[in-house]
Length: 286
Ligand code: BEZ
Ligand code: FE
Image 1 (cartoon, rainbow, N blue to C red):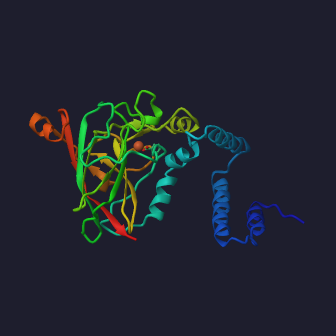
Image 2 (image 1 turned 45 degrees about the horizontal axis):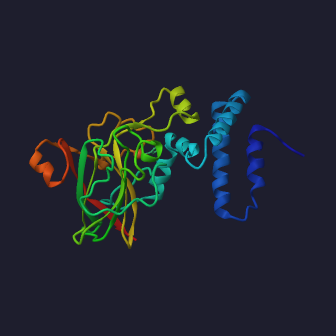
Image 3 (image 1 turned 90 degrees about the horizontal axis):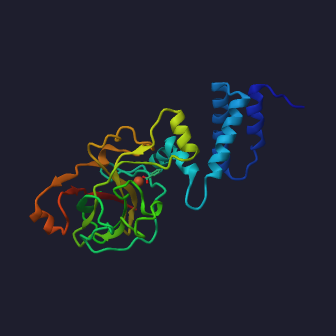
């Protein structure tokens, strides 16, 4: 006999999973069902709204292929990606904070000598990024690896833009014997996340914009340390307080200091104006 009162429906689903052999799966699915049902009750979802939701998720799936992951984008604009990241990366005070990985990383960026530029097309304003990679106890980490990527001055990553050379604005750099690193990128620009699909339509319906504040992505790693996936954001960017994917953290916002001296520019083999940024990355031992 079935009892299908509103409360009993939830209990029936929970009971159906009582013998799940995987304890973690059972915990996750029990939480999901409880919260999903509570949400439906709270907003008193109509059948029409439920169908709209199904259609939205269907078109989100249909937008996914090997180049586009619309479900991750959905997770990003709902803050879910950042919340999972925060829970999964509870780091000690002083360690460099992590932020969103994003969909535009590519394996296999070239390893370049200290001080080299990652800009192959010479567009944008050069930015010299220097600093050290340290352990949380303050000692330098010689040989730490920085894998960096950013958009060109048009706000597009190289794989989004047929005009850019392969691997443009990507590179790997090793810290020297004192943990010091140096690379030349370009001053990043704010840019919109891909908004020509269901996620973009959702943003517009919610009165939200699709922009991310200007940033350089970095994946910093070293043997024996917990790697960190992070960004350097540009101080003063108009989108710092409204990042479409909620990735901004105060500790990652840095000054890009402008320089106009030809003499200084010659030292770094860059054109004027150029920018300098100094930032120490701090990793937690494993
Ligand atoms: C990015 O910063 O590359 C990014 C992050 C989340 C969604 C889209 C782009
Ligand atoms: Fe990005």
